Length: 245
Ligand SMILES: Nc1ncnc2c1ncn2[C@@H]1O[C@H](COP(=O)(O)OP(=O)(O)OP(=O)(O)O)[C@@H](O)[C@H]1O
Ligand SMILES: [Mg+2]
Image 1 (cartoon, rainbow, N blue to C red):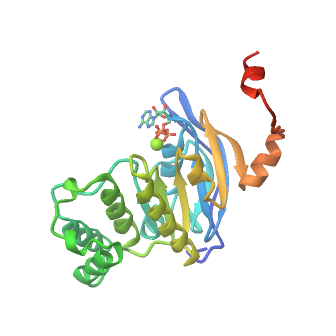
Image 2 (spheres, rainbow, N blue to C red):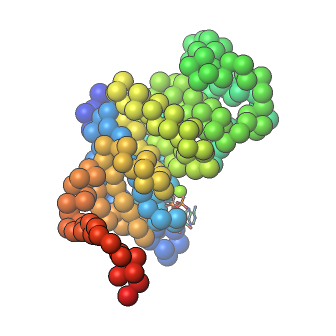
């Protein structure tokens, strides 16, 4: 198996304890290549822990799986090479400039011409005029843009984005999602955690976890159908008065 695998994420029964607390409980998920998978759940429900197990940064206590065809327990180095992971907090160097950060990432990944790769990323991100600004001085939206740029610079096959739009304004969020869809059309698979329902609607599939357990998974219409909810629309005069009674 290799990065050519048609199923980008294929994990079964992932379980993780921190001390006596089971924070991820029997988590199973498959994501097809080129799909955008949304990952929802309240604070502390186990999203970040699951993402870290999927990319081999954290070893599950039980369960198994493959990421881009590589074994999550035994082939962590291969997974790292082909996965772009945007962590929940800003993880680039605040006291390096934008250009220096991008060149650093290019060198860590052993790209042949790091300066050229960084320059290409700057142009793609619309960051050329800010190239010499310190990353720590950027606004939230530009920090997020830079972090996404650093993630895709080494040419990954899978992006794991952990709450990438937290604290970002609506226009920057929209632009970000347009970019995610553009990347998916080029064959990248994306798993993105979010608390925003409008973002969930832009995913091909979503998974919802609470207390470490997967409660719902599928396309939005599938999830709505499985919830078996009925909706009534009531029209007419004096509705506010009737509702109050
Ligand atoms: N390294 C750790 N050691 C001990 N407990 C941890 C560790 N990492 C996470 N936890 C606990 O595991 C649970 C799940 O945390 P996790 O960060 O995966 O949740 P999350 O869904 O990503 O939450 P959020 O939406 O706030 O980012 C929480 O109760 C958290 O306190
Ligand atoms: Mg988290």
